[in-house]
Amino acid sequence: MNNKELLRKIPKIDGILEHPDWPELVVEYPEGPAKDALRAVIENVRFAIKAGQVTSIPSISEIVQAARKMLGEWTNPRLRRVINGTGVIIHTNLGRSLLADEAIGAIVNAASHYTNLEYDLEKGARGSRYDHCTAVLKRLTGAESSLVVNNNAGAVFLVLNTLAEGKEVIISRGELVEIGGSFRIPDVMKKSGAVLREVGTTNRTHKEDYENAINQETGLLMKAHTSNYRIKGFTHDVAVEELVSLGGQYGVPTYFDAGSGLLFPFQVMTGNDEPLVSAELAKGLDVISFSGDKLLGAPQAGIILGRKSLIDMMKKNPLTRALRPDKFTIAGLESTLLLYLDRERAKKAIPTLRMIHEDVNVLRRRAQWIVKQVRTRCPSLSADVTRLDSEVGGGSLPDVVVPSFGVGLKPRGMTVQNFETRLRGLEVPIVGRIEKDVFLLDMRTIRKDELDLLVQGIESALGDGE
Image 1 (cartoon, one colour):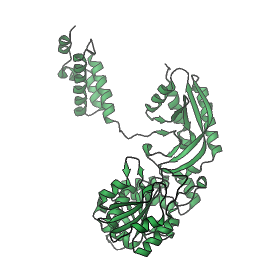
Image 2 (spheres, rainbow, N blue to C red):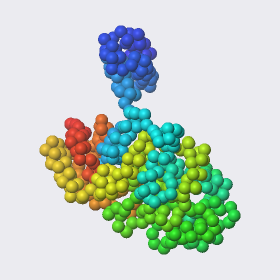
Image 3 (tube, rainbow, N blue to C red):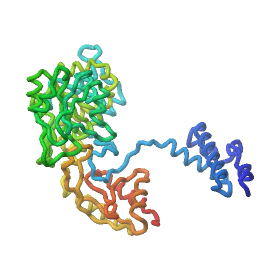
Image 4 (spheres, rainbow, N blue to C red):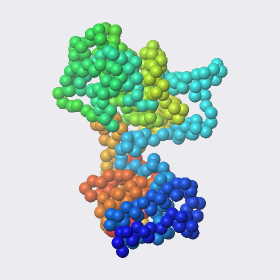
């Protein structure tokens, strides 16, 4: 049968709508999208015939089934839950920090009810959404005032535009960082209207470099924490204290983009130079900013702290409205910050902190349980407990590795690459990594309540093998 004959035999839409399978489909899905899917399937069949890819016409039942599959793909949410077995705690590609139950509850409350987002309950008048987190941030960091925007990139942009539009911003060449998504400080500075004045060299910058660059066009002295890389060896950078001293001497405000947002030191950070927000502010900085969804373990946000007069200037900047956080961010952030009032409680309640501090012996027992289950239920799979090193991730603590335990899996009936692909294709995808032809799952980023689902997913991904 030639292509023309095949094209003539394609079922007509009206005929398909009369077929007994069609009513079942429109019970599952709205009729409009169902008809769109049906037309798309017919068009695919027509294209395949013209391309010489098929030699027979699918039955009406097969066409309806193809439309059902297409509708499932159209209507299923693209943003899905995954199990993170990578060992990267703040995994940017997987959504960064998980939220504490208290933060989730606050977000649900804000979604389910009206709130006093911009209403002053004491005065019975309009209020400000920026006031909700101010009190707890001041208590935790010693800052005079605060401003929360939608992320730290927005915070950097707002600080530069407010304090240095049309003026020079002096920063060390070694701190002109780029983070994920091609976010580069020089590019942001240009868009903000500020003028970049880089000083020093990649590995060495001195106080004199800053001082020699200060002139009547200087609007800001800036320092950026190199949170996602380190320069080692023959190096020198300008300390915050030196920058503050220069700023006071010449009447120029000082700003530190701290990046990750550390509110108290972690045990795993011994010897690391991750800046502590309260300690940096205590050195006299005028403004500091950092992310909410990294080490802080809160929703995505950019948190700006510093002198009240400068924060007030930023609040009046028209750009602030474009960068403002929604009620869900504010609710989740405030609830997370309140947990920090008790450090020990914060370590247990905030998932990011809990995973960083999780005892390695607990992880080993978790891995042993997984191995026992897999060996019993999946005879075609080799499973062993494996020592691993976890990462904090999210551009935070690049020098720190956290000892961990995981599970090494190697299927006997298929390649490890095929096994990994199948795991990513599950209803709840499982994401891990392959090393030396073994699929690894790090227990540090797998929650206790996910273990049964993990084993079920492994069993499902094996199928009949290949």
